[in-house]
Length: 356
Image 1 (cartoon, rainbow, N blue to C red):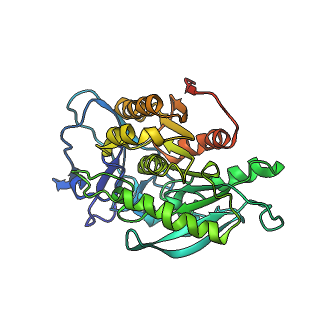
Image 2: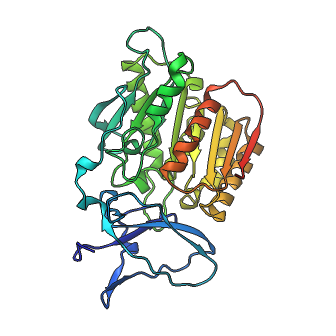
């Protein structure tokens, strides 16, 4: 293993997939790297190794992406893993741009006044946009690096552009998609609440940026359907958490949300917020969780759904994939189902469990 002087970290579903958190840096001892993680509950955990960022994630000896390491923790245990190679040791030309011709960059440094920082913003326009005068629904998605382009993704993309290019071939259910890149303070930006381990939550300011700055800009520069029924927000993990909160906090702006593998475990105030804000919550909420992500995370999601379903008039659609993991491959698989749900005129409450 090269880069012996670089710090090595573990990132997983126990720390919000933070690739460089100081509390999860492995220590060198007798030629090996070790880390003890205290106070983990019995559950299924997934993780990867990095050298501080997703550009420097471990990979196979040929440079190929690897599946998450998985451990089912029942009691205190020790596990041994090996690192074959690092992603950044392989030429970037091996990773190709996959964004379709319908995807472009609005701005590489769009100003976020609520957070006093800048961010790259992507946009996907339907094929008919240039030749028509139609107005379109808009879906806002977090972790924009992973939405359209394999080249910019940390470890896989959603393939939203390819999916929509296929779905929209008949000219129906066309939609604009806006991707907002994450930044180095992702765990803070996507959390509406303070977290003892990760620090101050900036999610309320981020949600305000979406509702009060970015949406008005998009509506002012593109032909959009501006009402809440045609304005959606979606994301995964921490992005699932902030998508849910944004829909909840701005029900007159966002009418539909995709809450994929939400990191509710990082948000101590999410049940209380759901309880207090549910009376104004409406529209459609799509929830997804993979069966291999851990029972605790599944339970957290269903606890939130129970309060939301009891106290709001919202339509809730929940998907559980028994073989699903916490990764882009799983979210890419279920994005078409989410899209059909938010675009369809459904009026019934549905719970779906995939046991295959």
